[in-house]
Structure formats: structure tokens, C-alpha cells
Image 1 (cartoon, helix red, strand yellow):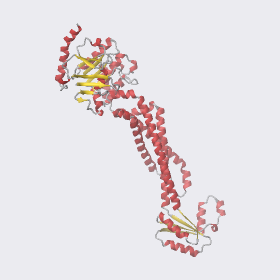
Image 2 (cartoon, chains in turn red, purple):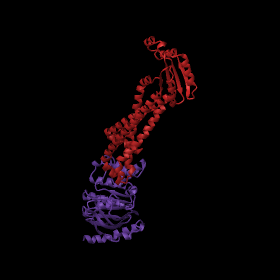
Image 3 (cartoon, one colour):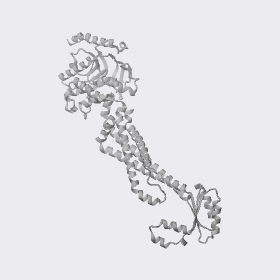
Length: 288
Length: 256
């Protein structure tokens, strides 16, 4: 307790240096939080697509019903197929109407004739989509086949890219935070050299002398983690309506509160390690 | 209590702080280490608290060979041997009481005990009414008393006062020596380093005289390291007091 109050006294005595350390930590943990949220969201999105492996075949307007029925029968018999659903032109119009209830002008312009009938096939496994797609493609009744494997592959690449970028950027910022705290505590430690030497001559142990500096470093990093996390959360809450609108059927938001607090817990742990490491490095000369 | 056995301290530039010095100080003794500036008195003090490494020989303090003492145990040594520094080394941004409290806090005492002990030390050193003063508000003699009070805080076995009368007038200097004698009476071994030979001239105390890092005279020749294999015993303390008494007529002769 004494050491904590001594650390707080050190912080109060040099407010600008302390602010610089906290500011740098805040930026670091803000970026860490944002990237963590983006990666979490992207993973959920990937899971959404992977749990709904679907191939859609759009039929030509001239496609005879017998050929459509034949394709349905041929696909239904496959063990790799989870579910199959035929959407007639009328069904397509109903879906279209539901999606555009806000825009009566669009509804007036579209009739069932211009919408294609389609066959939606869900696979048991995302890797089977290619086989189903190729069977459908071979049918002369089919105009176009759309399936999500490409979407998933692209999304996977993006998630991988975001994760690597996030890790590199977070790593660099963590190093920057670590360096900032080392420099600031190093300056403070050096400026109190005479006092530290006196304490040592009076019989103070290494921990008695370095303890308040170590606690000070941890306080900087933890304050940065809490502020960074808080700003990231506020940003997320602010952007939630726009993101929900953009993602439509994919339900990612709101992020469960336990996820946010788990993230905060992880960041505080990381901050403690950063703060302790930085202050131990800053005061290492005394430890020798 | 303290044994120096052929100790030499060599600085980085090759100069020697002390050269091949041997002596022993028993528990409860009051010893004056005298010599001009640069004679090696401060080097001796720094070596005793392991603030300066020795290049040759052996120092034993309260049974511990300083060559073998682990760095994590050096704080314990420094609580056993307290030093009153020539430049006081008081923290200028803290009050007198806070400076003394610091020394008590270092040894891990708690609030109320610190307060009680601090009050006792202020009483002993005659600074009770100056507890809330800052060092800058005190005279040289008062600062010296604060430094002594702080050094006594951990209840050390040895008190090493480095030039405690250095910047003081004769009267204040003598009052400091009287205080050190009172502390010695209570059982603490006191070593006082001084260059002021006149001030200590009439005192009936054992003297170690240094010149250019060499111990040129030990007023008690019986205090040789080899005679103090068990220097922690009460017998030794008795012997030490006898030495002082025996030395008295000799000192008188010197004077005449």
C-alpha cells in the first residue's frame, strides 16, 4: 500500500511525463482492441458463411420444368447434400418484395417474369460446394451458378491479412509503449539517483527502491489499457447501427458484454506484463 | 566486531585508498580514526559497508566475511553498520521526522512503532522541537544530529561517523562527540573518523591514525586481528574498556 501511494506521488510530481506514458499506452491498447474486435467479427462472419454452405443455380427462363425436376432429383440423391429448396419466379418476387418494402418504386417496376427461378442447395460441408456446383453447371437448364466458396476463400484471406496486420501493428505499438515507459521511468530513476543512493546506503533492499517504479510502470500501462479499451468500445457502440445495416442477415452485433470484459481482462494482463517489464528494464542498472 | 586483515583498496586509476591495513575493533568500543584529508578514512568507512570493493585482504563484520557476502545481504550489513555521512545525505524535500522515519520504514517497521521510535530518537538527539523542520532550516550541528538520529534508527551494532565535527565549531563539535559517547555507553560500537586532531586530543579513546592510506599508529597494540578470533564475546568488550583506561596515562604523557 505504501509503495502504491509512493508511486502515485511520483506520478503527480511529474504529470507531463506520466501523461506521455499513459497516452502512448492508450493508443496502443486502442489499436489492439480495434484489431481484436475486427478479427473476432471476421471470424464470426467466416463461421456464418461456413455454417451455411450453399450453392444457388439460376435457371434459364426457357428451362423446361422436366429438366429442372431432373436436376432436383439428381442432387437430392447425393449424400453430401443437406437441404435443397426450389424457388420459383413467384417465390423470388415475394423475397424481392420483402427486401424492398421501403422502396415502392422498385416494387412497381419488377414482376415475376424478370426474376429467374432458382435452386438453393445446402451442403453438409463447405468443401463439397464445388462438386455440387459442377453438377449444376452441367445442366443445360442452368443459366448461372453462384456459390459461397469463393466468398469464403476471399474472406479467409482477408481475415488472415487483418490478423497479420493487427499483430504486426499491435506488436510495433507494444514496443513503442514499452520504450516510452522505459525512457520515462529511466529519466525519473536517474533524476532521483542521489535519493536512491542514500536509500541504498541506509540499507534499503533492491525491491524497496525499485518497487515504487515497477508499480508506477504497471499503473501507466493499466491506465492505458483501460482507456484504450474504453475508447474502442465507445467507437464500436457508435458504429453499431451502421455495421448492423451493412451486415444485414449476419448477426455479429451487439458484441456480448462478457466478450468485451474478457478482452479488458486480457489487456490488463498484457498491460501488467508490459509495465513490469519496462520498469524492470528501466531500473535494471540498480539491480546489478 | 570488525576485523581488517591486510586490506588494500585500489581505485580504477591505480591510486590506493588504503594500503595493507590490519586492525580489529571489539564490540562496544569507541574508536577514533584520525588522519588528514585523503588519509583513507572515508575509504575505510565505505569498505566496511561494502560500498567500495577491496582489492586485497579480508574484512569481517560481526562474523561475516564481506568478500563472501551476497549482494542481496548487503542491505542487512548496512543496517548492522550505520553511517553518519560527512555530507549528511539527508533528503532535502522531507522533514527531519520524515528523514528518520525513512530509515525505520526501510527496516520494515509499521506506523505507530515508527512514530514512537522517531520520537525517542529526536529526544535523544535534542531535536524534538525541530521534527517538522526541513533540513534547509537547520544549522550544521543540528543537521549532524539528524544524521546521527537517522543512523541510529535501525538500532545498529556499529555506528560509523565520518567527520561528524567537520564543519562545526569546537563547542558544537564537542557536543556531537558527547552524544556519540552517550550512544556508545548504551552498547553501540562507535567509530568516529576525523581530521580535527585538536578536537579529539584530550579524549581518552582508542585511536587509529592513518597517513596516505597506511595505518601508522594504533593506540591499542593489543587490537591485532589475530587476537580477535571471537570478537563477539563480552570478554572482548571488557578488554576494550580496559584498553581505554590503560591508554589514559599514556595520553597524558603524550600531551606533556
